[in-house]
Length: 96
Image (tube, rainbow, N blue to C red; front, side, top):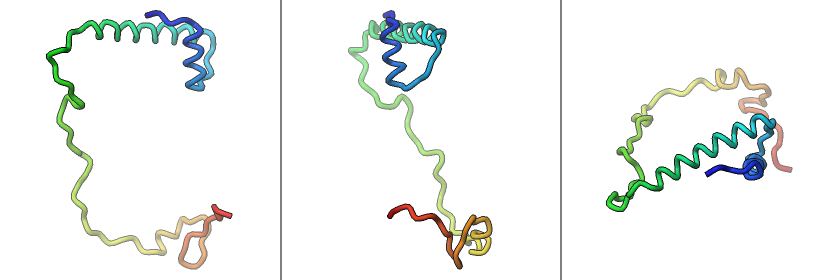
């Protein structure tokens, strides 16, 4: 499926991209190639294949057991504060 220049410009507008004419032409070619690949995939018979959300089992590899540790001293935490008032961070008011 070949995209027209107007369709690509509409996509560029929706994505809020500022592209040169050369980039628009290159994007038109690349998007057209992607859509042609999807057309080929749509021809594959998948009637006997059950739908899957994940092709591999999910597992959280980032989570570790919580460990109890001492916190830093308050003076060390406040040492890099741009502004402080007594033992607190001083920040500009957000709400009126």
